[in-house]
Image (cartoon, rainbow, N blue to C red; front, side, top):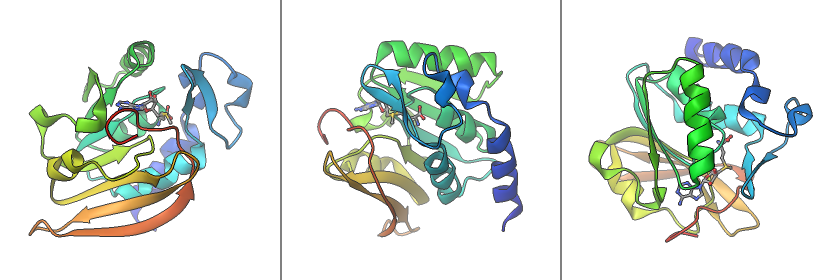
Length: 193
Ligand code: SAM
């Protein structure tokens, strides 16, 4: 196992999931998605870890995250990359995540309240993209904002079940897609719902 993967696992084991939840805190140690209000969920911990490891973060990676949610996944991204740009469409979740991650002292995260279906063009390209809501197809906007040599993790499929895909863009812009898992995420609202 790579040293960095060991470091991510160690950090993850010590990350207090309950800190990212305002209700159902007794569920923090259960390996399931848990409601965080607004019909949204904090993701299943084992999946958050799998997705983070699969993204293959480097200390200088510039990362785009679509679906800030509770900020749980954002903390992992911020800990193991250079900078994180995270987009959330629900104001209350966006605000709470910003407060929590500020409290934890992260100064490498930029937050945006918006529809993330279109990515965050102003700061593109990104070395890594993490999408934490399910899209019916891979948004072309996210493909074009992924840097050559970049990697993206995204759940793609129907509202009931999706394929968790790793998309890799080579230096010539050619795309490769790998199936990682079968998953069930809340929908990516908007154009790719
Ligand atoms: N990793 C997050 C966590 O553990 O808290 C998961 C968040 S939840 C599964 C998915 C999030 O994506 C929700 O907060 C939802 O509001 C957000 N979302 C859905 N569609 C979106 C869109 N078009 N733009 C931005 N955020 C979106």
